[in-house]
Image 1: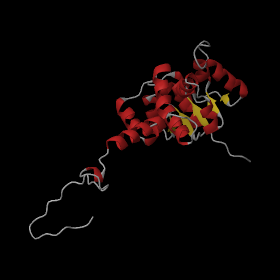
Image 2: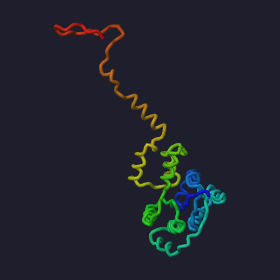
Image 3: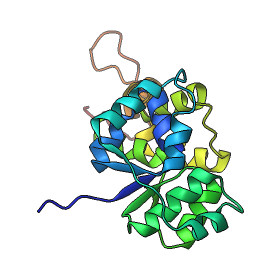
Image 4: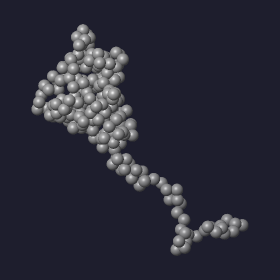
Length: 214
């Protein structure tokens, strides 16, 4: 029997990846995704929104599945600080003993981690895809998130991401190497010695010192 990961998702990772045309990364990395009724309602609230057709196609194909959260008491407690989709996603992840729960919002991530759940966000998904060669440029994917999906990233986290080697795309690395090569000081450039024999520079000798051959 083939083992499959149990992965529960909130609205944000699915919607944001769909908006930038990268929804398929979820199926490649996790196989199947389960969402709660509240998350499905949030995803289907605006059929004209970018990415909606890709989400609907995934639901019809069956690799995004819907399951109701049964622990209503926990959902109500979580809703004191989280929205309904996040609360149901966390409750469902606990009920199904999920391997991962996909969340982007800080408060939702903190609540899930405090309950012992393993959390993955859209940035982690894109980073894994870049390392696997499934995304050509992590830099471009994140820029698309910010401009097309209005995805907000804390400046401190953004600085950490920019420090990653995966963030530097191929063209950036190539340009940086060209600049370094252009302005690097070559060892022999500090003092030029004419070895061609044409117009040799005079060599001054100290008294008592003979000529030395090069």
